[in-house]
Length: 198
Image 1 (tube, rainbow, N blue to C red):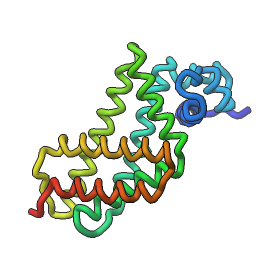
Image 2: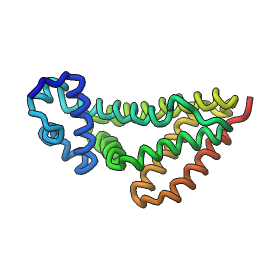
Image 3: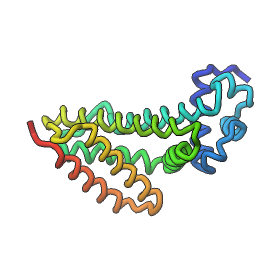
Image 4: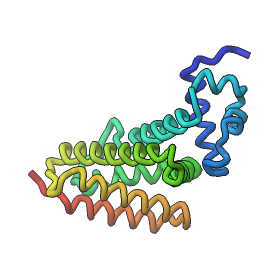
């Protein structure tokens, strides 16, 4: 079998961890289960990660990077702040619909981390990443639409994260695309209402 570079091994293990967590929860994501999912030996894991916690932290970073790519694309919708906000929320929803197990895994990881004293830092890291991503998206949207936030951008970012959390959980439960699109429209209008044109 050809030697796999450590960077590729890390990616394969992260993707395997997401799949295992999505199917069976974090408790099912033992090191053995993850390497089996990745088609690797247990020894391969230790060449890529020093511990299971390091892998879980990398899963959180990977998820945030995936969402950043969807929410902050190279191109941007032309239009009002509400149009831009709706487009960003729609891209997030498209990512959710394309891989619901990934989002289930992310939610499971956050809840598991909150219940596990040695892993609570992962839940904080995850949501700090979400808040930073939302603030970056909001700043980008305001700059490209000639808008200015009437509230501190960090405050609007926390609202946006809460709205996307609600969208995510509601859709994972009922898989109602129409209701999700209505929520996206309402969320975009709400967020855009917290800014004015410069």
